[in-house]
Image 1 (cartoon, rainbow, N blue to C red):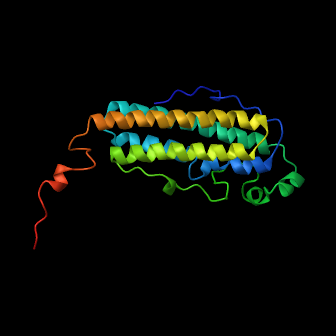
Image 2: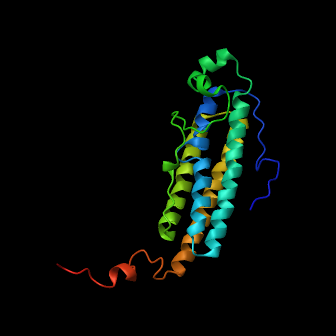
Image 3: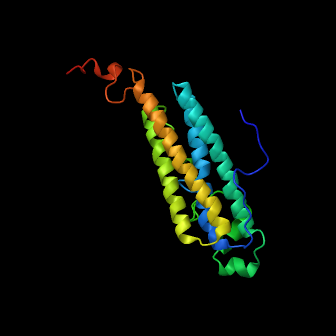
Length: 204
């Protein structure tokens, strides 16, 4: 299914360690709107999609989200790899450090561990595509918030790239929704499903 190219989708070269920034960016690894959840969402949903075009979109974007996860983890690693114990204490990284040292572990900025409860795979094409579009907007908002909090250009440029990709993904899922709406039938017509609604329920 995949061919792995051993380079990041966007180059990352962070020169200044910064544990505070690492804690913020961590949320796009294991947070509720992060890249781990995004990749699992789309690569899970693809199996129940009835149209090849939509399966292809979910596969493409789910795969790209894995590349974005790799970028986020690289940023966290570069931000924490040369921290002194004094910096870890002063920059609010001690709680994470005591459990994981500076290993990469999926959690939100609040410290909440990653959970698959942060995404849904419903098996209904309309429901899942609306979930996907909302997910991309939530991730875009999270990147907006990160950019409001961080000044270092070594961090901001890859974050800006990731934000731009969320916008593109939102547009592609919108295209998939239009394709789906053009092909609505009794198998996926969300407003009226004949198999449920054709015969009124018996009144006892």
